[in-house]
Image (cartoon, rainbow, N blue to C red):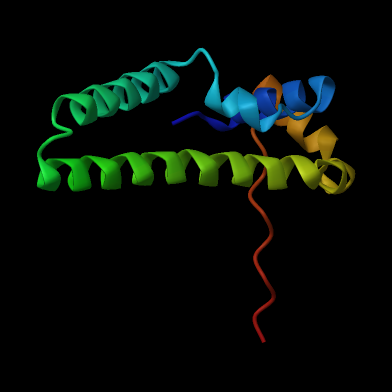
Length: 115
């Protein structure tokens, strides 16, 4: 898990470079992408090997469908965030994000008035 400073730096990079395309989340260079390719390749190899067994074929096709659906959902989610990035950029307090990126601690938010 990233801390607030790392998250703020990441947000500033996105502000400066623009929001990445959904394909970046699919074809990145992080270890999670390598794991994704290995799982996909393994499922395809198992499916090819066990194609004659009906139960195995059904199970592996179900897993493959689940896997492809998860990737599609992730790409759709990133695409929706990208479509709303202009609004997010307008309403974000960038001075506060810059202070967080520098590591400046923020004061706690005020407590609501008790009635």
